[in-house]
Image (cartoon, rainbow, N blue to C red; front, side):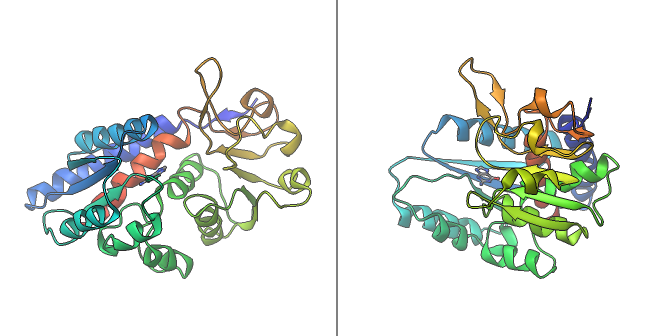
Length: 278
Ligand code: GUN
């Protein structure tokens, strides 16, 4: 039976550390403000944005909520971002994704000033990550590194396999594991013999977007399995990309859904917000 990595507990530890830092910054007269922009009212986005605002409140960060209509023009959204770029009181800007189809997401991300890019999605943040320079780290992969390290698991020299190559998770996850001296393979929908490649992994990060696709037959005995997926099944219950009941029998460590990676994404967003003033 695998040890369960408690993302809720670890994220609370990180948020408590940040809360103390924010209190100290306040004593120096420094306030932190995060602008959170949501376009339209996709229910999942509303939940994520709500959780981000709650985390800000917990830590002592001011949050400014921008709830913009679904049919807002791209021009008008870009203008709002530019105003926030120029507002000295705003330290971080987050535009919740996905955006409606008539808006070019890449253009929106590029418009956010890199020094306020707390999501770490701006091409200059991504470039800095790739060449090992300082910059905002994307929250989900950075949170996964914290989950692994704070569980006392070493990454150095380990076979790390990432399933999924998205800009938000898969690609930056590979780079961060490499930075920790892991031996990294990034797999995707065209990978041949996916099962065989996954079976090599000491650390398997699954961000495939398919409910319960990864069962014990993909997992080496004693592997660490991190599940980035989140889905709602027919009974309205949450599940991940990993078949938890099957994999927990062979893994040494596993993250649950919910309560694994999800809370860490928000904790790392808060960390980026705190870093944005320092
Ligand atoms: N949508 C899904 N994940 C994220 C995230 O980490 N940041 C933003 N802005 N939108 C998302």
